Image 1 (tube, rainbow, N blue to C red):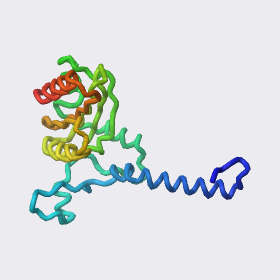
Image 2: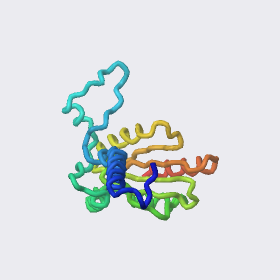
Image 3: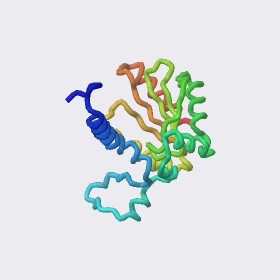
Image 4: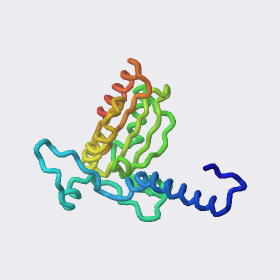
Length: 197
């Protein structure tokens, strides 16, 4: 059925209500992923039970940002993460300064939602030649970063062009945007420079 300017107002309202309901259902996973803490399940070792108690689930959940409050918007969450960056060294800014010094600059960076990686704060961008996307996340401490690394490593298991590395209280994600030897060499340079900090 096609809505036209001559369709009845009741039909237009009913269709709009259905579309807004459909949109809400489609966006629910994106909204819900940042609204809870410790709900991601870890893969169990072979032969281990996959039944976990709530206390056990919280014991393995990465320490990181507080759960979003009801009514938080994406922008308020980003603002909260930026205002509450952990005072770690090296932090994301230090990582990008080292990459620039090594000849692999990421000239334009933008904040991304740290909650996605159970991090306190994340920022990323592309290398100057756009061959590599680089994201660096900050965690309150090395233990939280290790848990964040394990969680991040399991996200998008089919993405073979992605490398995840951890160093102190940070996690770096590098995603190859091109499939060539130069990009592989650039990724290796980025990861080795990061791990040497």
